[in-house]
Image (cartoon, rainbow over all chains, first blue to last red):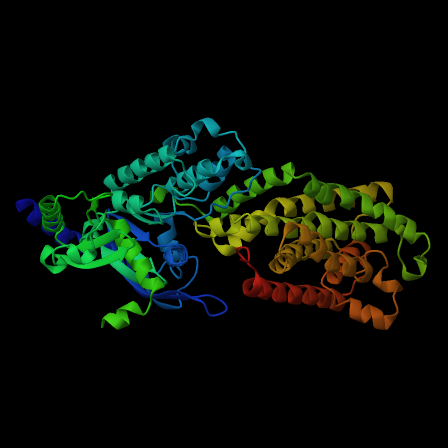
Length: 328
Length: 258
């Protein structure tokens, strides 16, 4: 328990500096589409913060406001204590940006592109060094149009890192990368965090957010649907057990579900799905019942709550928007 | 860190260098920027043979020289830049640049620098060639020619940005840049000098964006342009510049339409 207290103590001192502060942020596009509808979060110095969400959840729309590409239509953004749009001169030299889709002239080589960027970045480190960092040093003389999608993403990352930024914005940094490239990027991002860089990334890969982020916010339809550490967000979700009913048995033959700690269930043909917040107790009771009855629970699948569960839960609520009202 | 903070000039130079490499690698852009402006003045020469230039106090050289400079502005600068601005926008380069330290004006100016430099070099080369081949004497009021050329270069950059604002693709850039080119060639004194137009038509044509440029350049060589006329031409060019800058700030698109 000492460890927990220690963590809390460090957290308390760290909160004194929020590198990114977003308050009731709103963004409305031409034509009236409201992409961001009152989003609030903050990012502490030296942490990896993930914005998670399906396509169209408002991740990129939010990040673009943090990058200062457009002014918000409502609410407030502060990056390193400044408004990234109106005080860009104070913010830009200290931030690195990787957009969702990198924009590079296709006829320039990797080296020419990086040199061009280096001329536009304060405190740029040597081009060769940064290309080596992302594993593109062998591709220096290759034209951008000949790069694979993954290589282009890595070039984009290299440019974002040129100025050794204090704050790094990565919009879907691993989209289009193969498994190895993704792992390399994760390692690089972790190393940057350990070196003191604050990283805000968006992703629709759950494993990426779960494995990489210190804290995360799940966006859905422009609003914050869940927020916290991956463990906290996951803890709010029930665990799941599913199995096939043995032949000749009906759902009513199972022991009373409430006594097993089950908080919700559904039956789909012969398949029973249970949701519980006490996974071990529910599983034990269920297996003991099966042994007493002498039956085999085929397709038995016991899984603790995961971010995926949380994510799917949010999507489920959205596809059945009335459910909450009935429940209430 | 603070020792290596970038400056606007440094940032624009880095961008201009990349843009120059790109210009060198695009064959169609090179033809437009380098070849066409050197060839078109020859066509004006045949047209001048049917004109009554002496009544207006002009010579063949004094018609071809301003026309050559005008072609250079239209093709090496204006047309080239419409294509470049649109191409960079559609490749999301402009958006990417805007996420960095470059300011909006620096992005456009830096990208425009190589084409502008080529345009300027061409103008000087053509002026020299006209002097040598067509016996055009040295300019009598060089300051007017300098003002005219300077205004012409800046105006072409700004008008290219305006045109790029309502051009969707690099292919359509070849179409959207035609109106200014045609109107200028016909009405701004490129082929037919203002002095040879009916007065009422000339009065209207004087308000076109590139007319003051041609008027100032020609006046710079002949020395016949009065102070009032020179001021009026400068005012017209500055007015177009103001309108252009306003239009760019208002309507220039930094990323593709989705």
